[in-house]
Amino acid sequence: MPRRPASPCRARLCGNLTRERHGYCEEHADLAKPWTRGRGGRGRGGRPWRRLRRQVLERDQYLCQRCRRAGRAAEASEVDHIVPTAEGGATAGHNLEALCGPCHKAKTLEEAQRARQRGG
Image (cartoon, rainbow, N blue to C red):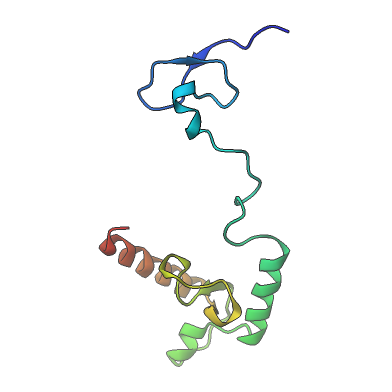
């Protein structure tokens, strides 16, 4: 079987050549990530998340909880963490709430701004 042609290492500023499938030379082989499916075992996705999402929407009666607290009524289309996972929140029913699209977008922007202020 013919050998694989040599190609430049995928590591930034590395001039070495490699024949490895992952594209990294021996020096940078630790940068190669194993192939993972979907989200790599983290976060949401799949049947368990869909079930939990449906349970939260039913519990909150398909109403945006932020709008409800402000005295308005809006149909919820998203389910979001009350305490973000990046801040130590769990992906469990007690830490999830139903939100409408605009509230979800505003909340995500607030969280991103907080993360930038924290420096992470």
